[in-house]
Image (tube, rainbow, N blue to C red; front, side):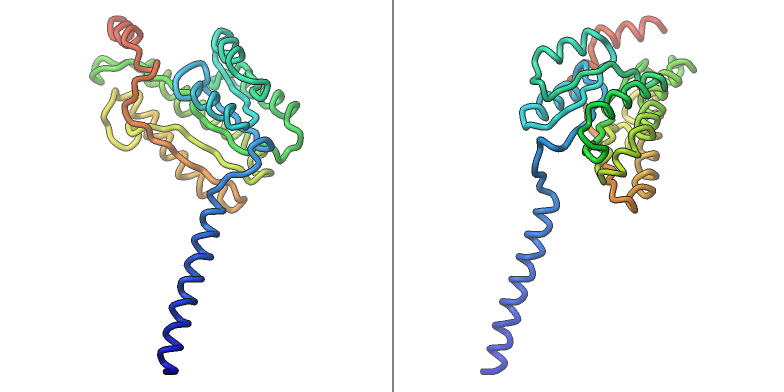
Length: 234
């Protein structure tokens, strides 16, 4: 009888421990108080960036939507609520990044309010065999997809450190499998390496780094007209 009681309470204790652990994990991944968590998203003129801003806006997040062009900024402003602050940002230009930082700091209620930075801005560059790709194609792809992301991350990291926020890098399956043009793959492989390194560096400060690796989606980055134009220019 004593052994049966011991086994019974051991099972009950095990279930209780499992429930408490499961509940704790669920709470860790559940986001609350959207209205106090500001998010910066780059590359919002079109595609994933634009769709993400619209989605976050509907959920109630205050968003800084960074667009490359005035047309993109204006179009996004027209369809979003006042929770979305649109701004111009060229991720290849350090001065433009500094200006974006100044705008964000001016609007943030506190220096611990920037909850996330989503590095979404990216380009495809020339597609085709490596023999058809020139030095300039590699420079163009890396300046946006790699160096631009690095500079934006470096610039906004102090704010993320204060808020113990999260840094999100939109990479690509082409950063793991060489399935696209060489310039694009090179830039995305480099971004994967940067993400792995910085994740280890900032984890001690409570900052998380996530990499999202989309596959082949029909967004404006693979617009047939622009792709064919790039091929013909070669």
